Length: 368
Ligand SMILES: *Cc1c(COP(=O)(O)O)cnc(C)c1O
Image (cartoon, rainbow, N blue to C red; front, top):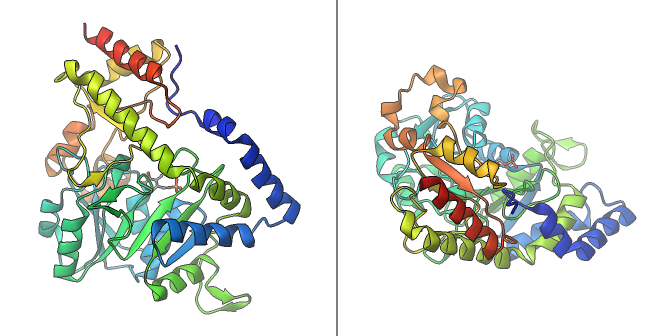
């Protein structure tokens, strides 16, 4: 049996007619940049999510950069984020001229350890950027509490967590700005690069739209210098179709994860399965286990036709790009010890029970 890591083709075939029609409409209307499909998606996404303002942008990395620029983050500032995430979260901090300050992760939920944030705050700290990693909400209540106490901004990186919930509220709706990626492999994915920023603050929404459109709200009237970061019409039209199914897909992912967890019960402690934070709805962008023999298992599974991945093989402070911060593994004991143990197993809505059983059976065989 073959089990791919994700199967975007299966999803396309399930909704082929609708998606083909959406693409044909954009071409027919030559609504490639801006236009009604982008506006429609911005409005639909805002409505579905409960945001007052959504601005479509080029990708999730731009979304973070645009959010930080709108908050006035720049040289001399420090921004606190988490050591285990995709580099977009921290490289955009540096791109503004500010300094990324990394925090270790929680042992159970793999997200920023909110109890370690306060000790990293200085008089230069301007913002906290928690990431809701793998589809699991970070401890956002605690992050917000700290941010209020010290007068800091919060940007929630929701690239992996569209419609995940914390205390029955969608992640992204707690902080000042939420950023989203619609990279094809994300839970809500376009057919190319796409992203969005979202907020309930009108002033921030205007600033972000302006910055992403060359500093202009009206054509040829540039109030500031900005960048060019656009969600294009084709991506918006595809996202408009896919938005109708996101809740169903997230639910399927959760069901698959619970089935994996159940089947793995006999394999504990060789396999540590993901826990779900109490009062949270995990949407399982990734299903990440921990096992001491990670590389051997990965190779064994590859031979059995099962694709796996690692998110992430090195915590960011240990990457060459951040050597200048002079961190040692002791600064991030949890993240550092997990980086050699984590393994992401196949996870996508169209995954079948048989495939999940085959993956778990193969892992059982490996440990025999
Ligand atoms: C994917 C991702 C991003 C960046 O999104 P792109 O659309 O690829 O630029 C940012 N943060 C996290 C946590 C991500 O997983």
